[in-house]
Length: 449
Image (cartoon, rainbow, N blue to C red; front, top):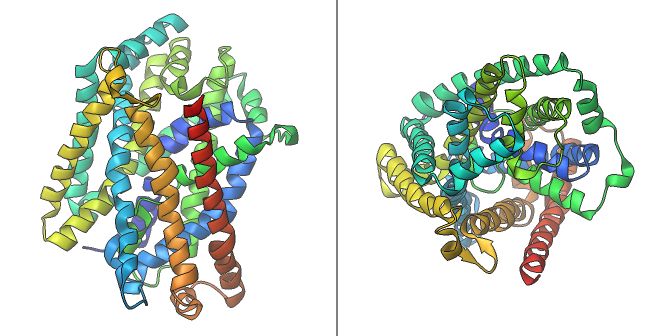
């Protein structure tokens, strides 16, 4: 596999984290969980927990230059070499894509169709989204297919001609469009109200739910736990400053999240919409807002284009680990591995689409949760935290501290190393265990009710 350039590695890793998690999930989570309280806790956790975890994952990939399974196997000092089984985390990527790319298909539909026929009442907006998701299986499937097979095409091209090339195009376009929308939002009267909502810290709004959901958002937004970071860092040049790369990725992601939040809440508040609009905010409230703007069709097109670019950079990063594994371990060509996985993802994704319809939804609901909700739970509540936890336990308790320090001494002083090592061995590990337990308790408590 060819190596990334330094900038290419940062852009690719940044693209893996910046996606629907920042632009779709972050704003509605902020609206539902305390506004500025959620924002402050999310930023704190991303800097002091997220960056150390990113460094740990990058170290495993960069020092071995192997795919996820072989990376653990290469570093495993034990005789029986059981730690290669930690590479099971790569199954999370294809599972995530079965619903993530479906949602991205919605973005594509709104970009190509709805932007030119924006709903002008809340009833019309709800109806546009409801009919598309619940009844229009053909349009949903076609939009999903465009996104997943475009992803497969880019990944099939490889590191230089695929991942790096398209991230060099898509990431700058994303930033340009979002900066333009941000400056547009600054001219809107409710800009100050949106800034206050995001940054006027309210201590009383902090509770257990806010903290747990901020932790969950950190995992989702940094693409931690599905093998992406290990795989990408294996294609970075040995000796790269992984601490600075991690900081760039995490801080840039925070900036994009905040810009997205300011833009969305400015538009919502200016037209009297609620901040707590839930997951449907992007597809119900925002199009209605655009319909009331001067040049709303253009703003809508640019906004959904930016979301689509962000989503595609994430989907290619999610697909890359299993493609690299199949290509390296089973001597399958990258194009064949990529397209075979896309066909499998598309097949399962069709079940996700059907589970959201009125006709087939009841047949794809189990224990009160739909098929899409169960895949979301299995990946977000189990695979992603567990994948991160295994990597931290591996570096903290299996590989010797001396060996780990030898890996990072080129870009960490002994003092910084000791702080980082303590965080990944004890604090971050404990945090992930708390997230796992909290997610299980929350899910099964809801199922019991």
